[in-house]
Length: 320
Image (cartoon, rainbow, N blue to C red):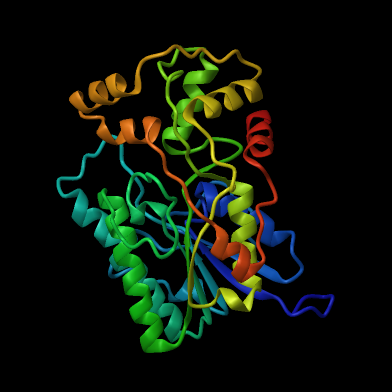
């Protein structure tokens, strides 16, 4: 209970030092209804969470209960993500240990100590790497093409089994690529770095449409899931609902950075074949293919609309 008499829910946010979790913790602190509890593998140099717990390596034997004490909700953002310079001798097993076994262990212990809602940050990649005529919906079915996406699918299935056995509410959130202010992880951050340096990109001829979501929009949706009773035991695709082509993304980033976009044309089939030859087929899909999400379900079920357009969010992100 706060000094104002408002009942506050303690929210355990895993992956507390990560890109999405940092934004969520900040938003939770601004609310009168929530107290964030940051949870991560190791103690951070600096965290803004009111409470913080280090749990060590995440896997089938992680002890979560101390971090969950008094919490009514878990938002699980911690994960083993795409590894560009993979050094593990068995990446599939490594993804499974963290993203599947670790998630199952957390959910089981959360249910045991009375957590009522478990919000899981999954990935739209569970549906596959590309869309063609129609965007993905929640009913599109599983078709993961990477070890990461496979592990997210398996984690979702493990969570539904825990929910069935315990009665704990589960909410699955499937975002596309997430971007925002500061150091953005993954390929989006690499693209920003290339554009900042003024390097030319052979992408002017690409004609595609891709869904993205800003961190602020994703955090807003997660906050909606915490508050809305209709989110319980459901799955949601989310995005900015403002799909972009790869050249348009580059122009928007460049404009936000005050740079001139340096784009030159190479036919998409030539670029795709060239990247495939050097073992970069996944990159070819990301740069040249379409990946569109339909967020109608989130709109209708939770009355949620993204607060920011892609253009607005990119401008804000590049200024910080």
